[in-house]
Image (tube, rainbow over all chains, first blue to last red; front, side, top):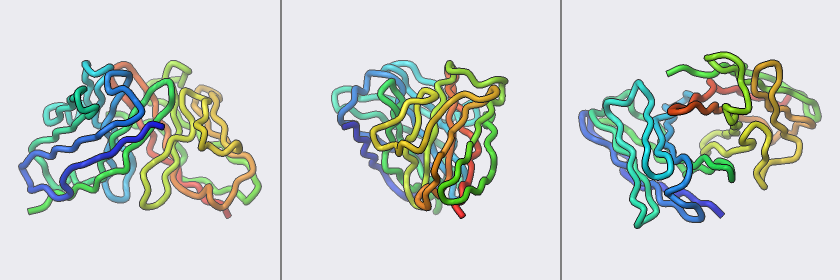
Amino acid sequence: QVQLQQSGPGLVKPSETLSLTCTVSGGSISSYFWSWIRQPPGKGLEWIGYIYNGERTFYNSSLKSRVTISVDTSRNQFSLKLSSLTAADTAVYYCAWQSPRGGYWGQGTLVTVSS
Amino acid sequence: QAVATQEPSLTVSPGGTVTLTCAASTGDVTSGHYPYWFQQKPGQAPRTLIYDTSNKHSWTPARFSGSLLGGKAALTLSGAQPEDEGDYYCLLSYTGAREFGGGTKLTVL
């Protein structure tokens, strides 16, 4: 059974960098597409970016200058860093896996950007 | 970033049938977009109902099915139940990008 467990802070100050981690069990972090997605309060889903086969990264063009997605294969984890935060980045952040076995989601982390 | 087009809201009667659609911003949806469909209920993470156009997870109720219809991805619910109320999102895959639909709010009434 594939499980994705997210960890990271729920409150971050403006201008700072958000760091979230997704720990994976039941799936290989080096295979297929590992994504970060966010959902502002009351709004729809927005794709942030993904890392493919543990190596290649692709980002939403609107966030590209502020986003880094990376993998730690030794811990079977992948991570999101989003810099220069503003209130507009307040959202629930999800990690997800897209593969021939289907789609799996983390539980979500509400991140509030506020001083 | 472009957003795929979904019906903002739909209503279906209990036991009835409804089809939700997902139109790409770039043209026809094909199997090469590997369409996904997600269900989301208030306060919960989305869960995947359909992947790669028509494949179901073990937890996907049999009344849901996915297909391609008229150049769009489609999710059909046959025999709607009250617990099917919620928001539904599609996802289309491109090389180097992903495109979510704006979501459909489904009411069973």
